[in-house]
Length: 305
Picture 1 (cartoon, rainbow, N blue to C red):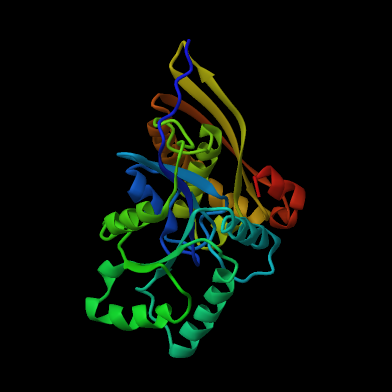
Picture 2: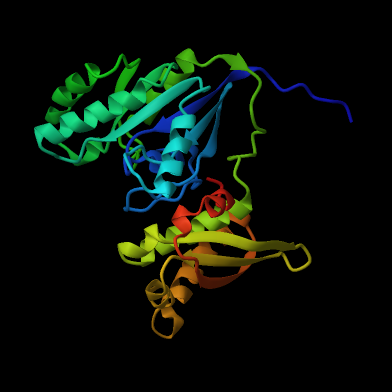
């Protein structure tokens, strides 16, 4: 077979950064028109860097969804923050997102802006500020916010958007296409992410734990895929996965009365995984206790952190 040289297009890698719950994962999913990153109302849902590939007429933009930037002394959170900070270098552009719907006192806003400035000082690439969730505020409130952040850092542009509705995202893509270089595509057109189906399955299960359990459980939980086997003859994928928790008292909460909670988690996860792999899925879930796993560097590395 003759080698076909890829067509030269506008291409580049763009990091999505910002504080927890700013809407980075929602933004990437909306841009791509499909679910790549898991999304929950709880902050710090994203733990790993994940790439989403946007293909258009004459261009390919690879977006890197990253964990939320915040201060923490917890080993798990420190690993997540380092993943995000590492993603800010060696990229063609950075998109820094904040949630403008969250009201806070003036001294808190100044403290946050000072923290953001320290992160942004690491960036050497062109940088755009996205003011997200504009659908939740009065548009008259935008100008003072834009003026305040314009003094913070020499952004290439400040763009009000709604990652949920898609408002403003065309402008973001247009601005990126003005500065991204020409080159070969990073991925084939039919590859939407660099993540494996195995990794995405673990993320989907973790998302359901976040959504279906209380405040304490999500941050004490981790998911590892023990086996991921495809049976072409039966058009089936069989997955064995373990949900790890840190304390025995949490196990009963995740299992639920008569095993109802873990069953609900499994049903919800299986549905999304089937949509992802486009075939039937047999999902087996176990719950195990691993004390202080979030402080175990070896285990964190197993999770890809």
